[in-house]
Length: 244
Image (cartoon, rainbow, N blue to C red; front, top):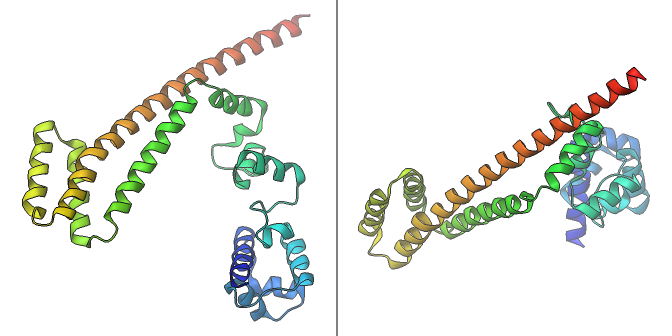
């Protein structure tokens, strides 16, 4: 029960924040004391069925969202279906389909913008690019998890050595390895962690990052060239239609 209270409170708070609505305004709209919403948001109390319905209606979200039964706020059936099917956040859906603007992304709202997105998604290198990005993320996360439990001084040394490894030549990497052993060799556990996660995986992360950026550039070049050709062909067709 406490977990449900917490979920409902988090969902109400998220919906309020997204719409920039104050708690006291919501309280007035649903007919409760100002501090009642604070109790709901903190998970100290649970709104009753009637209050859930009123909150959902005023904030324009589904009751399922407030109850933690759905992760999408919208009441729009099509939007909800697309988000649930694709896993896209609702905000991403709104940008792609023109319901929400972002600086520099207005072009996505037209047919050309969606065609570019489609060309990227169907590009033969797109899957490899995503896998590389996931690999980089997991390596970084793995490294950070291994540092959990080590004191700040050791982690500080590790991060400095990581940065050095990224820039170093092979002989310099051997110097870093020697420095680790010299400073932490008395504690095999710490030395092993640092040797494993400072020297080896960082090189893999850098390589994967380089490859993923290279793939991204190649995909963008292909898509820009392909889109340029389509636009040019379309302009030719318009001119032909104008001549007839």
